[in-house]
Every structure is written in structure tokens, then in C-alpha cells.
Image (cartoon, rainbow, N blue to C red; front, side, top):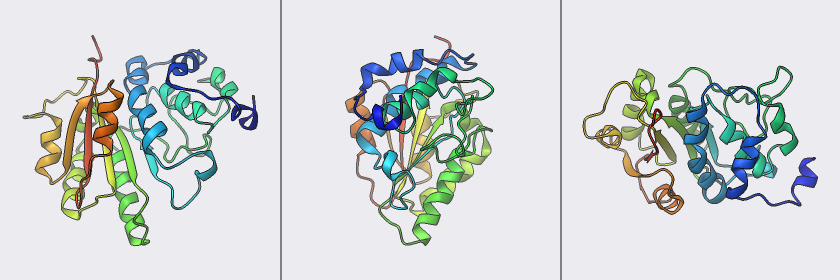
Length: 235
């Protein structure tokens, strides 16, 4: 099915398990693949101002997937929204497929960064927000999705500490918390961001209305983080 043909067919949230089921390649990170599903859907369905026809528009919103291991949910949502043909999904993980075990921005339409080492997405998002500010582009929002275990990486804490005082109010971070971090945060994850001057919300990561309300909450003059709690990784 081509993208043109696909656009005559509408995919909804209920179709995502079926789309994910098309990807039969060996998935090394099953919990990571499913923990992000609801966050990704709400963002692409109701929040992000970007689509297949505007993926290269300088005025688009940017979404940076830092939690790139286990990308099946990401690929399914991109396919549902028309960024890539659904018939590419069954090739996931094969040697000649563009859909690898980490998304590649040079191979997958709509992907903003190639993922790899944990802890790099938020620093890149900070740089992206700064770059847009320097260009005088104040409308595009920058979103990044990280896992709670990525907060074990010092690079994220440098980014958190910089973004608050810099007043990067077009920067948004979603932390999908499936209790996989090695080091607990006193007061919870949100408290770490709040201490650096961020606006913060903590919600049920499977509740679409709660996610939407948190994603769209006003936060003038401050970057915004949403901690989306899901079932524990080893539950």
C-alpha cells in the first residue's frame, strides 16, 4: 500500500495493536515498545503540529524520540498517521528494512534524530529549542520523550539544569516512568525538574485525557515536563 492509497484509509488508536502485530522481527525491548504507545498516540493525534506534508516545514513542531530502543510503537503511530506505508512494517528489524531497532532519521520519514546512547535526546532538544529561538522562530514547539532510566545519565541533568534558567518555554519533555531507573529521585521525578525551574505534571500514562490536559497545560516562561507513569517494566 502506498502513502497515497493509505491516506484513503483512516487508522485510529484501536488499530495500533494490529499495526504493531505486523512487526514480527525480533524485538529486544518489549516493555519499551509498549510503554510509550499512549503518549505517542496522544501527541501525534492531538498535540503535535506536524504531518507527512509538513515534515520538512521550518515552522513544524519537532518531536525527538530519545527512548529509541523498542521503537515498534513509534513506527506504528508514524504509519497510522501516514508518514510511512503500512506495508513496510512487516520488514521491521530485517537487514534491508529502513525500520531498525533504533529509528534512523535518514531512513524513516518524520524522524527528527537517530537514537542510540541513552541520555542524548533531551540535550539535543535543548539545542533545538535554542536554535529555533536564535532564528526568531517562536511558534514551533520542541518535544522529547525519554525513559525514567535515562535520568541515570548525567547529560540529562545538565540539560535540565540549563533549560529552566534559560526560560526555554517552547521545550517539552515527556518522561515515561516504568520504574526502570537504577537511582530513585527524592520527591519523585517531577521534583527534580521543578528544582531547576521547570513546570511539571505527573499523570497516568495510559489515560489519554489526563495526558492531553498535561501536554497542553500553560507554562509561561518555563520549560514543561510531563511524567507519564505506566506499569512497572518487570510487572
